[in-house]
Image (tube, chains in turn orange, brown):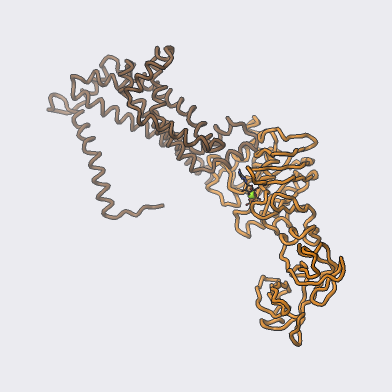
Length: 353
Length: 258
Ligand SMILES: Nc1ncnc2c1ncn2[C@@H]1O[C@H](COP(=O)(O)OP(=O)(O)OP(=O)(O)O)[C@@H](O)[C@H]1O
Ligand SMILES: [Mg+2]
């Protein structure tokens, strides 16, 4: 497979309004050549809108799009040379897998022999060479999305746009195809924007994850950074689970949480010293406590998740519910109704805004 | 979905079949009578084949039908596709316009054509095709509308455009093949309507196959019946061709892939 060098994408101040609704608000993002950026965010936050604007299927109200140093804001979708894979199955129902893949070349006037060999090459890349002559309704959902990916790549697109390509698939196929997309993207070296509302998917596939909320790009950083150093409370709460524990500010940058001192970032929302501190379930540990006190909690439930067990507990002090993730073998030491002391293993945390 | 047939269903089917088949069989039987009903033969069929104007009028009707079908497709496919994409706000209006021919009496339609059609059109029998397009609008619109509603049109069109296809390529390679049976339905309706249309042709003084049948059969009842049988089976034959054509291609593909 020929590897294209990858092309830089520069989205500059994109705003999209639908009537009074601001679907995208001053959205700026640079994607490096051959980089895979995943846009992550809740439903309706504008992920698809951003992707469609880059692909030319929607026109931004404001802002510029520069691809490979060339402004393409006013170029129509069919001249942008981008490969798209959609959330809904989008294979052309009257064409075989092979014809679907070759379609982009056919409309470019490439001759039959070249088209066929390229289609074959791409179907091989996505592991479907045996299904070349199948019609879309003879393919499973996962196979259809593979063909859609091959179809998008066949034109050697300058940018690959994937809009929740895996969301209609079952969990197993989804992880499998996700890893495969990553492999293929590496191999082909095409700059890629991948939209998803599934955090795990975004984290697993992307070089950088862009977390969106209500039309804004809150943070765009490598997956570990987004998870461990969320820039603000919105990102922290959207990515991974968060406990909001009661704490008391002891200075501008420290707080007392469950009797332990911890460095904190952010402002108290109402100026009061009593705040909520955000801590991840795996940043908490448990000890059996001899007797209940205001710093202890009572175990209220277990959910077995395989390697980890998620324990729910209620703080005696103010009845706050909290989640603790422990290796399943350890979790068995804390039966329901047991009194436990909660230990914070994080050395810094965010104040809930 | 498989429909399970119960005895009552069979009875209804049988009743329906008799209702259709009886008059047909009777017509076929009549059309084959020769020698004042004493024996059977193809004499009545030979009779109309040798009447003046059989071939030219039949061809004229075929040509009108073909032109009508082409015009219907060229006009209606892009229009209905448009109402399913960006032009949703025009949908009601276009649907309404397409239904109007149902309530306009053919006579006033003909008078309208005589007064309003450019004379250059009126000097050729092909003007009929333009009028047939209008008369067939209620049916062809419906057929295409239903077909387009049954596919994820927006996604397919966007997929096609994002890969680099122009609107014409998208229509030709993606949309039309995806609604093949609806397009065939529209073609069939346009053809059937043009082949059978009588009133407009008479009012506008053009000779077509239906007007010719009317003329020659005035004084030969059995000949008229055999002509109707001929026309009927001819029409069924055309339906079969239009209906089966796409399935042939499909079954080829499945075999290849097996
Ligand atoms: N064509 C449109 N007309 C009006 N509003 C629209 C249109 N397209 C999107 N919107 C609105 O813009 C907002 C952003 O939509 P978008 O499709 O980008 O969300 P999303 O992040 O992709 O959500 P999801 O995860 O559900 O796909 C939504 O509130 C949506 O209702
Ligand atoms: Mg979306």
